[in-house]
Length: 244
Image (cartoon, rainbow, N blue to C red; front, side, top):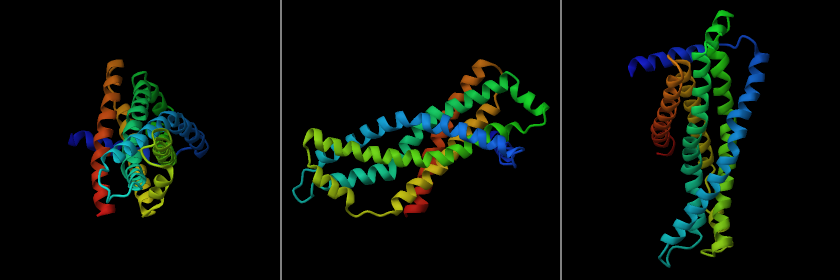
């Protein structure tokens, strides 16, 4: 594990070197923003709506004391979605969707000797292949998470409209009550860190592939597993640092 972490650091050293041609880098950055971010909006939106709806239903179901105002449903839904569900759960989902894609894409290039061809042409393949992906994820993922927050809160609102467990007025009062803007900042800081972890780990796993098609599949699995573990670990660390 220590040896592999050292190899990861050496690859990251090459990744964050100055790009050979900024024009090529900017073009690749736009492509990766679309591939890694825009194409993930569909699944993120659907999951976020149902996630917010479930949180609202469970909160309303567990409020059984007349001393607790029903507006706490909106407050609890907002806090749960912003603080944890959108930045962490959605990042875990992106680790599976985006991480496996990056690892398999770069791993396939490694086993088909395309990366070796780039090295022969004098191109830094780690920088050319991984750096635009890392940059794109760190740019677009916060936007995706903000959209996820909106859909999550909308899911709670739809519960009020469809089920009648609580009124929309009470839900909105809870959404507006006791709001601290730092919760948004906290969520976005986590999102940027998670985006870096997902893309850098997946890029390294694909870049370090040795073998054939089976090795590419194993690299994709490792990318998802290690990205998920690191997200959970850094979620604990950042929460301790930022909220304690």
